[in-house]
Image 1 (cartoon, helix red, strand yellow):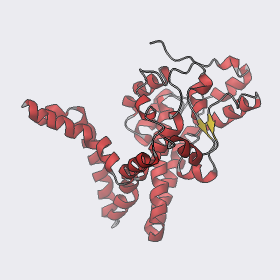
Image 2 (cartoon, rainbow, N blue to C red):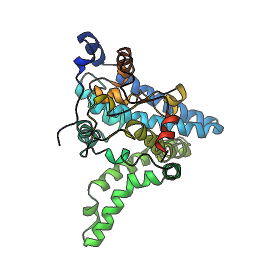
Image 3 (cartoon, rainbow, N blue to C red):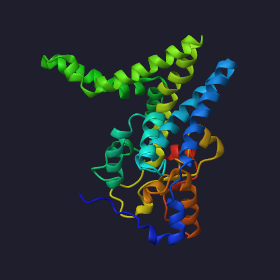
Image 4 (cartoon, helix red, strand yellow):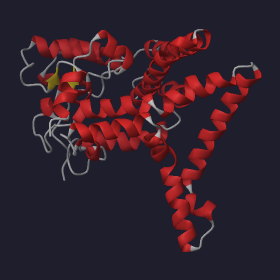
Length: 308
């Protein structure tokens, strides 16, 4: 199947506007990565100092763990830094070590958005669902079941296949074993550092717990917001993804680093995340708002997505 129809920037912006939107920065992406880690550190410190704040800290840290993935996503497009080597180094070591695997997968999503070849189509195709179905999904996220399945499900399945085929389990596990080994080693080292400082519980409660619970849940909300209820094989690029207007608390707890401007990202993949709001404003100024797929907030969107 041919690639999905793409927007042409010159149809929406003059040369000066497009140059301003796509200009790379040698510091803004680095500042955002530092900001993300700073918020994580501050939330962990607050939760450790005042245990009554642990529930809020878990939500904040989980959202910023999503934020690290969002910034890695910018690095996958080469947008995090003007130097590609710095872009990839920071994206891999300070955002997510999945960068090299994620990039080809994600670029295929852009090429075939909402078409049969779109690898993310399975995330949006089931909607709308019933509210009971959504509650079950949310419970799996918040109880850690989704995390376990995504992190270790592939390894368990390959080990089982290896036993059934009579092959050594390490050979059958393959890449999953190496990936999960790195994950376990990294977290063991993190725990060891905190334990040496007499605060091993902080790593478990304020780093791993958000990763296991809130991160899968808020990632699900993000996936629903971006493409659920968007028509397959849509010819109009202004309707191939969705932008959700996020309030202050939604930006803090659900949609950090302008991830809510997902339509603008699909329209113009050369625009870094910190300029997506500007691109949105320029499109709105041209009277294109009625043509664009948008929602006024995440709660109205979830009501729409659970109306089956």
